[in-house]
Length: 300
Image (cartoon, rainbow, N blue to C red; front, side, top):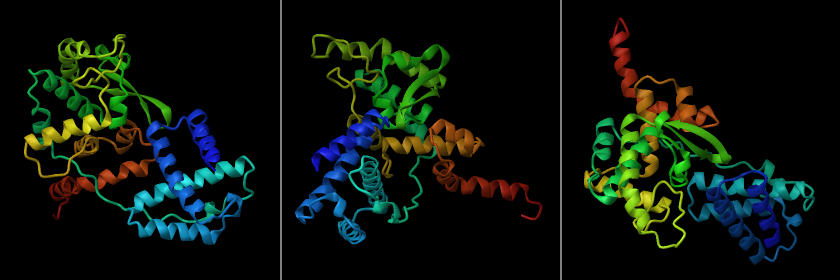
């Protein structure tokens, strides 16, 4: 059983170029499924039938997972059994006909423009970590990139003279994002001062790290570290909202749309393959649309 899972994960990594974050999620989902299967002494996976899969789905629902998590777990299983069918381990993937629960349509949490500007101004930029944090926040808001994309940035990804930054997006797709002048200046300040000092703290003898954003020990900053940084400044400006690095991405998209940007342009900037993923942001611009309506309609 474990070999089947390992072969699948290797296939996703080598052939499909799936991101490390997604690989971990798939691995965890499959471990959970295989443990459930083995505890019931079910034997060969080829014996799994519709009734078993429905029982497993009921088991997951009883654990009070959100609908989005349930949907992801079923997607993991579908892809796994598709792979088993492709490899000839099973004759038919019965999961292909099992429907996922409908996804929750929650509006994204975002910051108002004045809140976002307050957050960007909150680091004490003349301190070692404050200088780094200001650059980090400016880059997040200037580009709308995901936290995983941010921590994967290397120095070679920067083209400050062109105000561009190259990232490896979901699905290992390379994309070019744009920087504004404030982000460029914040990066220049960080690179010329704080990063050099943080590099001196790096404990390995090689001192060859190419990571753009470093932690206080001089190593690559982690996703958890970025979440800590954002939470720190959210507390500093006394925001009550539950703000995460992804909230800055939501704010980036919302502010562009509110300023009149075309939704397809925002789709490209966010790196969404499907326009429907971007369309959730249209809900948050209702106030602006209502104001336009009241100003423009002859009988309003």
